[in-house]
Image 1 (cartoon, rainbow, N blue to C red):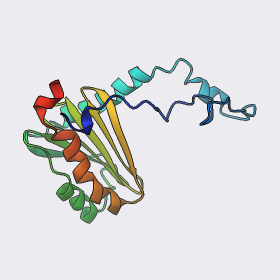
Image 2 (tube, rainbow, N blue to C red; image 1 turned 90 degrees about the vertical axis):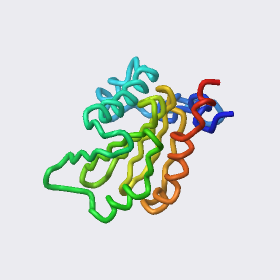
Image 3 (cartoon, one colour; image 1 turned 180 degrees about the vertical axis):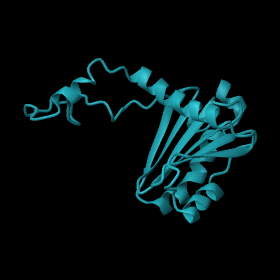
Image 4 (cartoon, rainbow, N blue to C red; image 1 turned 45 degrees about the vertical axis):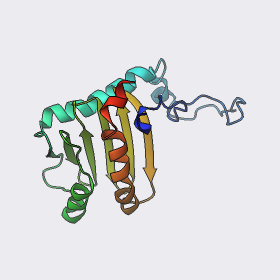
Length: 177
């Protein structure tokens, strides 16, 4: 059987306000004092479309940076501000690409995003954000399947190698079952 990267889409989409508490009762909300216009922009929000665009965004980074097979590309968003070099190298050393994989490290100054894919490109994809707040997201065939948050940079670096292996190195034959 396949690895955990083959499980179905996450059922509890935490980013979508369902208007109910954990027991399913409606949540009383005070009238909006500000931001009403801002939050109306979410009217008609299409979860599936947003999910595809998020995955597409990561694929566009890979396409634009064009890392070599089995290699990394580095993109620096701010010419004058970089993520601390020692921490940047720890990230690069901790995150191993699977055979035939490619990755992009996006340096935003205060954080680094690592976007990684195996072979074939884009079938399995992980995005890691490392900085003051660190997280992990995984997609299998465009479907978001996993999220993990970490309490610290160090904890993220300890746990990420296993997560990356789990979602990028799962036996390819099992992915087609």
